[in-house]
Amino acid sequence: MFKKGNLVAGHVVFAGAGAAIINLYGKGIAFVRENEPREIPALHRKVLAEPPRSEAYGLSKQPQPTLDESVEPEGFGAPETGDGEIRPKSTLDESGEAESLGAAQTGMDIGDGEIRPQPTLDERGEAASLGAPKTGTNIGDGEREARPCAGTPPVQAEPPSLKIGQFFRGRVGAVSESGHVALVNRTIDVSAVREQLRKAKNTRERVSGLVFGYNRGGFDVLVEGIRAYCPVGGLSLTPVDNPSLYLGRVMPFQVQAVRPGRQGVVVSRQFLLEREAKKATRQRLRALNVGDVVEGTVTRVFDFGLIIDLGCRVEGILHHSELSYTHGVRASQVAKVGDTLEVKVIELNIGAKRKAKAEADANAGQPAKKRATIALSLRALQPDPWQQHAELLRPGKVVRGKIVSTKEFGVFVELAPSVEGLLHVSEFASPGGEPLTDAKDAVSVGDEVVVVVERIDNKRRRVSLTLLDPLLLAAFEAGTLDDSGSGKNVRVGSCAKVVVHSSDAKGVCVRVAGILGRRGRGFIRPADTGTRRGTDLREQFPPGTELEVKVIATAQDGSLRCSLKALAVDEQRRVLKAIHKKSNRKVFGTLGDLLRGKLGKD
Image 1 (cartoon, rainbow, N blue to C red):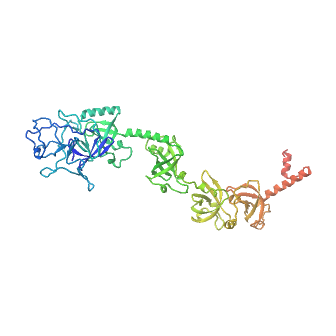
Image 2 (cartoon, rainbow, N blue to C red; image 1 turned 90 degrees about the vertical axis):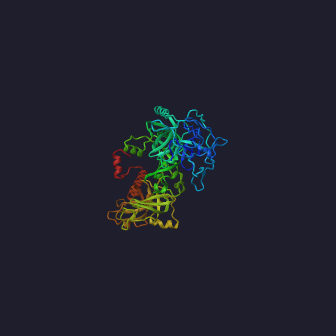
Image 3 (spheres, one colour; image 1 turned 60 degrees about the vertical axis):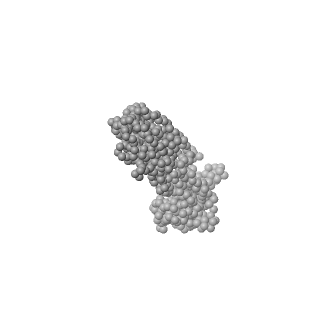
C-alpha cells in the first residue's frame, strides 16, 4: 500500500520516549521521531501552464507559475498530476496546522473498535487519496531520498512535543515487511549518512535508532533517516515472543556492518545489553546478604529443587530439603515455572563453581566459569515445628504417632504436624520371633503405634524412635506411666536394678527400671547369669523377677549388656578388701591379687 516517498497523514495516538505513533486513518501505522520536522520539504515539480482544476472545487485562485518553476504545493500534493487523479483540498487553521480530510480529532470512527478513515469526497463522490506518487532521486544503492527544490524555506529543527490526537503529515521514509511505516520529513544525504555510520563502526560509537517494523529474523530500525537491519539476538538477550512490543522505541545501537544494498546497514544492541546486564548482576550480588528475604521467579524445576531468578540474571538454588519441614515434599508440588516465591538467602558463596553450570559449559566445549552460588530456603520463613512441639522432642518421651510412610529399613512415624521420626525395622518381629527384613510385613501406612523418643539429632533434624514395651502399654493407656526420668542413660560399669521381661536358652531379656525405650533394654547371656551349664533359664528367671546387675557393655543398637556374674565378683572383692582392712593383714585373696603382688603392683 505504501511506497517510499509517498505523502501520508494521520493523527497521533501515542507520543513519548522520543517517538510518536501515527494512525494513518486506518490504512496503517507509522512511526516518527518527536524531533522530526512537521513540514514536508517541497518537491521540485513541473506544473502545467494551463490552470488547475482545483479552482472548480473551491480552492483559492493561485497565480499561474511558469514551466519549471518551484512551488510549495498545498495539502498532500499537487491538485492534479495529469493522470486524472484529484488531490484532496487542505487548508491551514489559525495555529498553522493543516486541516485535511476533516478535523484531526474527528477524523476517525471507533464505534465498533475498528479505526476507519474519514476522507472528504470530490464532486464525483469518490474518496480523495491520502497518498502522493512516489518521488525522489535514486542514488544507486537502493536508497531513495526526497530532494527539496531550490528555495525551500527552513523547517523547525526541534518542534514542540507531539500530543495525542494531533494531526501529522509526513513522507514515507521506509516500509517494513510487517507493513509498518517510518516517516522522514527532512532531506537525507544517504552517502554522508553511510560514511558517518562507517566511522561510528570503527570507533564503536553509539547511534540512536527508531524501531519501526520487523521482518524475517530481525527488526527494521531507522538510523539517521535511513533503514538499518537488527537481528533478533541483537535487540534482546531473551527470546522475543511478541515483536510488536519493541515497535516505536528509540534505543542506542552499535553499527555492525555498512555494505551496499537495501539491507547493508546492520546494527545491534547485544554488546550494550550484555555490558549493562553484567553491571546490573554485579550490583545485585553486592546487594545480597545472608539472611535477606527476597522475591524471585521460578525458572526451572528439577528433582533436586528449584532454580529461582532473583533479578539481573542472578539465580539461586532452592534445594528440596529447604522446601518445607514436612518430610517427602517434592519441588513440583511446591511451584511451577513462572511462579513467584518469597525465599530467604541462607548461603552466599560468590567465588564457588556451580557444578551444573560447569558441566553444561564442558558439554558445550566452553571453559567452566566461576559463578555465584546462592542457597535459598522456603521453610526458613515458615514456623519451625520443632520449636512449636519442643515438649515432644526429648529422649524418653512416650508419644502416640501415625505411620506416614514405610521403607525396607523402617517406617516414618508422624509425632506432630511436620515432625517425623524413624522406627527401625529391627523393632518389629515376625509371629515366629524371627527378625524382619522389610517393615511392610509388620505394619502399613495409617497404623498407630506408641513409641519412645530414643535419640534426637537437632543438626540433621532426625529423630530415632523405639517401640514401647507391651507390658508398659496398659500403664500408658491408663495415664499412669511416668516418663519424666526415662531419658537418662546408664553408664557402663554401673549397677542397675532390672526386671526380667522374658528368658530362653539364648539368654535373659531384662529392662532397667525407670528407663523406657531401647536405652533401658538389657540382655544377660547364659555365661553371665552365674548358673551352671544346662540350667533352665526359664525356670530360674521367670518374667517379672527383679534383679540387680552390672552393665558391662553397650550393644550397637543402644541396648545394654548386663551380667550377674560380674556383679558377684565385684561383691567378693569388696568383701575381701573389707576383711583385709579390718584385720590389717594380707589375706590370700584371688589369683589376680597374688599375681599383682608378685609383679609389685597394688
